[in-house]
Amino acid sequence: MFYWLTTFSDGGGVFNLFNYITVRAGGAFFTALIFGFLFGRPLIDLLRKRQRRGQPIREDGPQTHFAKAGTPTMGGVLILGAVTVATLMFGRLDNAYVWLVLGVTISFGAIGFVDDYSKVSAGNSKGVPGRVRLALGFVIGLVAALVALYVHPAELEGQLAVPIFKNVLLNLSWFYLPFVMLVIVGSANAVNLTDGLDGLAIMPVMIAAGTLGVISYAVGRVDFTDYLDVHYVPGTGELLIFCAGLIGGGLGFLWYNAPPAAVFMGDTGSLALGGALGTIAVVTKHELVWAIIGGLFVVEALSVIIQVAYFKSTGKRVFLMAPIHHHFEKKGWAEPQVVIRFWIIALILALIGLATLKVR
Image (tube, rainbow, N blue to C red):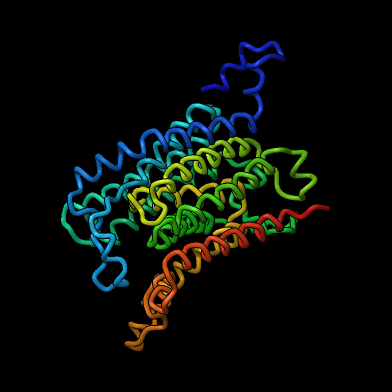
């Protein structure tokens, strides 16, 4: 919205500032942050009133979690509201990538909202059947893949970029669509699995968003792509604004989600944010780098897959409990220890991901 104020500029003055993505990204960050602070407490009060029993606690989980009974969920609404408002205010609304990422975010948020509502209403942790959630997620992923295929430059259509080696492109052909679907749905569910402790998921999400925001800005500038030796994808720079809004909204949410949490993100937030990050990775042609940046989420998801597969085949468990953050809780780590150490790991992986932007 603010971008259109540049039409009143003669090449200078205040309105000309909105030509710069970095200025608008700063505006998006502070708008989302203020949104979180303004509406956080009223939202929590509303959720407490509507959810008398709060989010159901797993009976087989760590004993310390039973003290969290009664804490409301669906706090992801706060983040989604913040990032949507900030993006619409400061992003270019004629940019297809902005609408693609926003669309995926809101769509996965809707799935999560229904799932959270079902859990709270029934008073158990079952919610929407997993197969239904996955099926809806793959439909969203398919639509996103088709849109990405349509809006990408012709030379990058259906191609998988290899980190560091700019001249290497793998033509996925017909496999491109299921590959993108897997990236987006896998990202959504991996972040969802990570959201199990106070503050555990939101900080790595913000770290990943900041990293992908930098990548989006870089691959959207032809001079940067030449210098960094990465593929040029015109228009992706606008996603820096979405990422800035996500970080601002995430910080606003973390204010209330810090231990002891006053509200949980719920599937409303975790599915939406994971889907958004996966989509940005697809749009910027950094799907393989995303596996590094989001390595913490990958490990969390793999721990569940390994645990289930091994238990079904042998009747035994690899981990004391999955996802893996619960394993460390069972080993005696205090919740803040797990959370902060996982934050550190997420930051290290993000820096490694940025290091793939090879400077000649």
